[in-house]
Amino acid sequence: MSDDDKKDKKSTYQVGYGKPPKATQFKPGQSGNPKGRPKAKQPIADVFLEEVGRMVKVKAGDHAEWVSKERGLVRNLTNMAMSGNMAAARIVIGMIASADVSGASTEEELSPAHRAILEDWVKLQEKLKEADDKEDDDD
Image 1 (cartoon, rainbow, N blue to C red):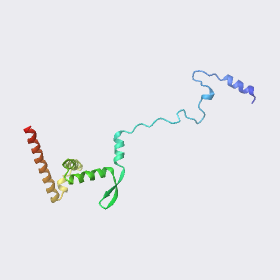
Image 2: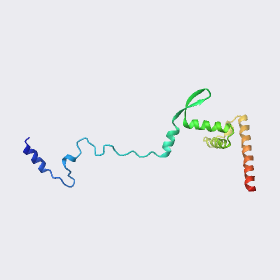
Image 3: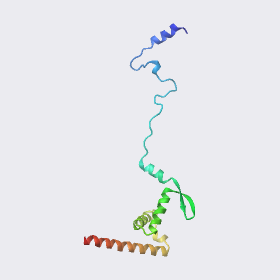
Image 4: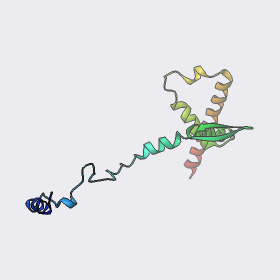
């Protein structure tokens, strides 16, 4: 192909609206957006569930074990409740009550000793609530 033939081909291509110069057109196999569309942000609920599902190493007694952050949080909360933290105890009891998805009563599953402990705790909570109510009435 001679130089004159090349000039003829270039001169026959009309540059204009919808017809960019050949030098600026995308080459075959080349994308117009090489980075692609940005990924959408993950909903915060998904991020939270992913994070609490991660495994962490927890020291239990004299050995360490791998547990999910969710399980570690529940374990820590129940330990706080057992050590006398009443706010943690209320949360744990609420969780126990709401965790009964099967419809069966938790009393049927408890041993008599556990049932007595739970009943004593409920009575203590009622007394504490009555004392708080009396203090609010006095104010």
